[in-house]
Amino acid sequence: MTTTHKGHARGKPQGHRRPSYDPSSGQSWRTGVLVYPDEALKAITAADGAGLSFAGLVNELIRRMPVDENGLPTWTDELFGVAEQKELPMTG
Image (cartoon, rainbow, N blue to C red; front, side):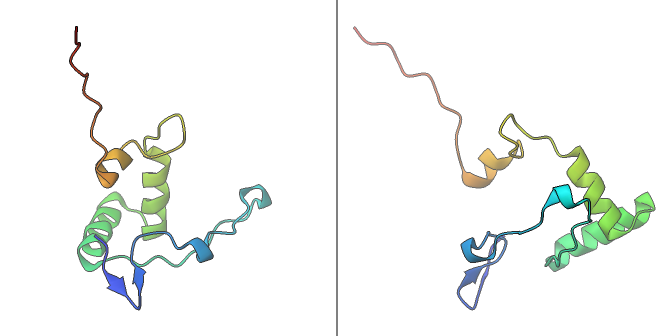
């Protein structure tokens, strides 16, 4: 779900505003996150039901997120519309 606002696509990374967090600092990463209304309701309900804060829910979801060998979420092919390569027919 991406909607434009002042020329920027929401939910897409902005090249000029990449995260500058250094995990080796040992400090927690404090970030502002824009959550759409339907997703906010889902997150609030899930966090409440699990006895977690929103931050606790997000951390747990990230911890459990399956990633491939490149560190990408396993569902990114769905997001970008990459179809599975089908075998081509053999000729002659």
